[in-house]
Image (cartoon, rainbow, N blue to C red; front, side):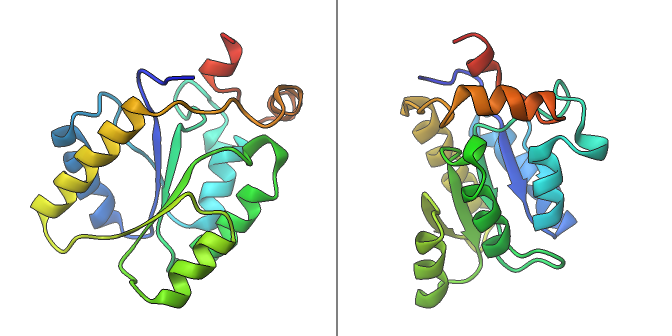
Length: 169
């Protein structure tokens, strides 16, 4: 299924990077601003619809997750492992966006189920170009529906959210 208005959840502990990415996404053509989680535990709370993330109109299930690796509390590897362990989120695309180009980090991310691994560009122009490519990729991609729609509905009833695309399917 194609997504016309993608929602990106950016998981990064740097608030400065988050502010910068808001501008970058706007310049790249995203109509929706990125949603933010500030570490792996915050990302899990977002996906579960816990606490302040309970309002799915304000915090919808993302189309794609962009995740940093090095974060406090729960790092990107731990959050990715959690995501892939949840039947409702097995098909959720997770792209690692990290400053690390270490081969062992790249291999571990793919082994845990990352869909892609991107190394953060070192300047604003590089970030804008990367975001434009991501926007183009999302717009031409066809996304699989969640692994099991019944599990998503059960997840939603327990406090999680249902993606709009699933509700209309």
